[in-house]
Length: 464
Ligand code: RNT
Ligand code: ZN
Image 1 (cartoon, rainbow, N blue to C red):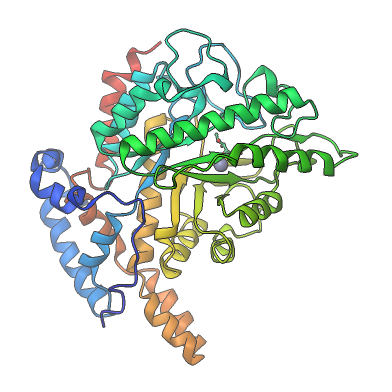
Image 2: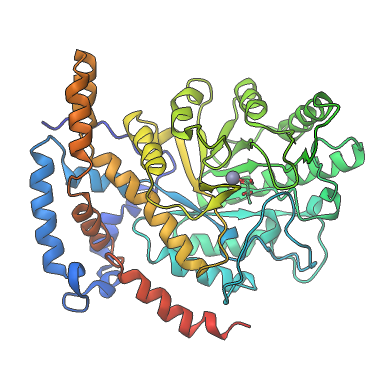
């Protein structure tokens, strides 16, 4: 009994105690107005949610899991929503550049955010439908440059002032990324590993400026910004020289990270990849390269769930990598055939990631972010579906009686371990999840969709 208590460590970048959503719930009951008894139908009915939760709580208590404790822990895990789902990675440089770098967003669903204010409004709408307190992840090309041409190596914290003010008003943290693509100086497919030293220097300066912006964000919001470097560098066909670009990349990264920044403000992450569209034969910054770099320099490794061979299990990498680096960043994503960026759904892969974070007690060393692009459906709904699934998977993993599995494993009773793991797959976690949404003041079950449809009618449909 009580095996779970004390097992789940909360994320280091969790909101400060005064923003504990359970206190928030008491202080701002108005936020719950969308979830009034009688205003919803079917499973969303308040009374049935409470009754179902009561039964589920008893069921979990019988196997030593305290659901109330789980929900408190769950509320302390932030997920960073990626800005680029809101506008297909367009950004606001207003220079008419197309998305390049071997990544692509397909679809033309109407209502895409065209301005920073629209994107903030859309993101606020998404956040209001997601239980808990989360974060927002910006790319450098989402700065506000007042109609001026500010090149990537000239960006400054002031260009992100409105984003910082917005984040502060919501009580959330920000994360950041240099944008080393969709730019004339990345047109031939190389940036930090370019053979031309002037181009390399340009991208080094861009990444240095990005770290400063990350630090400014972290300092003003009181929560470290994770600044993640990903580059598209690679070749469509087999290179003659695989070594040169990699050695140049290491040199560029050393220059970028030379300046020490306070980790309370900025944390550096590096993200490797398997291949990109148009760069199928050679990726300079492949996983082994960036893993090695991160271990050597004690940086965060960013693991993107769509960046490995399809039969590789990203979840299994977590406990390996965390033997050697202090913390990790996750880009939770879903690969489908050639694409690495479908909306996150509640798959075995996703549950596997959540299980590893919970069972390995890695939440306080992990920064969970999302990375998918879908322009074929309502973009705000894509955020909500993907983020709710990430949190739902964490909820399921926290409810799992993994302490019992570990005991059985230590005794060598693999039969019981397998039997219990299978039984757990049909435990009533749905009732706990619904109750969590209710307590957090966000729509229960499918009720969030009506909010999105209303917003689409009121706001998105008016955009050309
Ligand atoms: C690309 C990487 C990277 C990007 C974002 C936009 O394959 O996953 O994280 O998706 O920086
Ligand atoms: Zn990614």
